[in-house]
Length: 382
Image (spheres, helix red, strand yellow):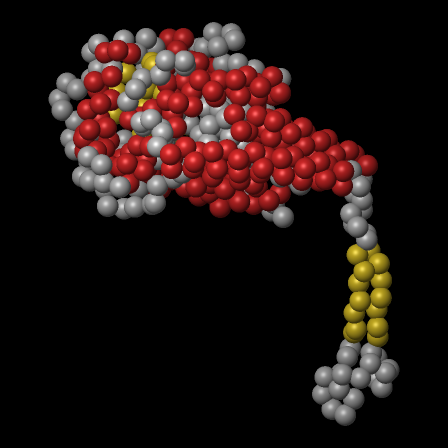
């Protein structure tokens, strides 16, 4: 099932790329930059697949023997200092040790390594045809004042979840029961507004007029079938620099942020892909980028930079009743339970990342600080 999902995501990427990656026709420099990104991603994907293959071969074997050498009771003062032969209590040790792993543990490690090898190879196969990861803006703290919402302003919610968060479960639920929900940004005819374009991140960071972002977003609503302005808009990307526009010009909105334990998120992304067909060149590259994105969400949450609800999907990703309760509570609505099949195939249970702690040790190490920041239990990941 993960292989089928990844191949389908690759096919969808070609249709989405023109609308998502740029704000205008590509200049020569932009085209060159995009080509370099894809070339580098492809090389990284092939290297990651090769590395995963080598790791898989070693996973089922016993650890290498370790040679130990030591000296006990070595004199450090007096006439015999540092002599290994003059003091009768001085002892020399030479030994070989080897960590013992039971057969069951070796089999489990091998299975995890084999799975990572397979997933890495699948991503390497499609990485050059997928969307590049957007570049996060430089962190900032000079936010405009949060305006007061106008009385009677239509209710607006903006939905976002990083890869592996399970945000598509929320999308499936809302599509089944909320007419104002829009997921057209992930279809073949997405809206042509700034919230559809990566270039908006750089433009806002370089001082573009933030009021234009919200004005153009509003102007596009009628063509999306939103007549009264009340909408739940599922966004394909997020960067905190968008707050330059939203704080001052869309204060009536609520941002719905789907999150899970970051290590479970990476594992889910690797195994199942994501609603946005983002290029996963290697688990380590993905972990570094995901940590950067999640640190932005953590900062938004810690400093309450914008009206928002943090939707922790860990316990509800495969529980339709819990999901309806979670999302309905965030929206102040009583939502029905999602119909059978609306949420898609089952995913790994919470904490399943621990089964891959050896196979994905370095990527998990990169994600551990932000996992702690978001309130998730941590453990030694080597």
